[in-house]
Length: 421
Image (cartoon, rainbow, N blue to C red; front, top):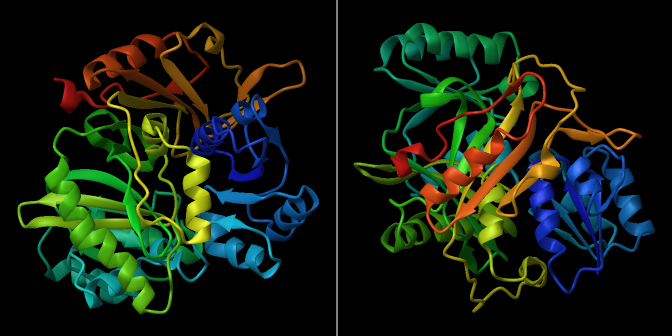
């Protein structure tokens, strides 16, 4: 089969790598890709938001399945566009993607169908949002309604911090139209976990759980990012928690979408908080998580291509998905200054010296004509250590990450630390 992957991050590099392990896959194209996908597939320099050009490519190259990584093309309706042209594609429609692209939609869906989530209020008035923060107990979680590349959520411990976030989102428009409306939620406390499921709109099959780290600095300090690292499996999320998540959140959400006339097919990502009052939803995403995918897919025993095909065919029932017992710890190497301003174009050294038990998934990288790999984004590489235990995987990744270097490199040193202490 000839496959097209849309995206240029470490998630797409991980997906491409896994697809190429399938005997069903002959060739993979990646739009636009990075230096990592360039080494194993064929990159095509098309913007992920240029739906016409991506559709034309799929038609010209006789692509038999397109897999969409990032949220932006999904929210623009790439699945609807492909379906209108009779082109096979994996992912939810534009209306189904509202579960991620509109936090208001997700909140209203959960409240209507009694899916456990944080209590909160929706505001499209700046003045009313500010007044709410003056009269309700701290802390608050302030969220831009629309897509903000994982950076549109602020956990505010003071009224000043909450009001500054509201001002940045609604007045300064730091996230553009995503800030037309804000949600102000109660701040849930507990252990956080990411649970990704695959669904054909009827059957729902969970993947192994993972934990990610959103703050830029150690000990969860600094601003939110698109993700600084992840690990799998978390020790605190076992069979009991998995059953609870499936029965109270994932299966009811897919059923709720169907009841609303918006059938959901593809990947459903649930960010969950295990609170004293039970498991609750923090957020939904309509695609594979990044950086969680980089520590989940290496543990998958099944043929990923076969699973994705079963979803598009509506034939996921009774499929047994199997996983390895090995642990994975992923650490993201970023450009200094990320998620704010940063410089690119620095050569990356040491990638060729890494041991076999270290996986490297490229994100913000490019290959220059002399064959030099350079930095080309905020999140540059995901380094993944594997091992029989999380402690072994952590030791492996952190002992190897020092062998890779580029100017102004930054990474967290505490990924999975609370599990391995």
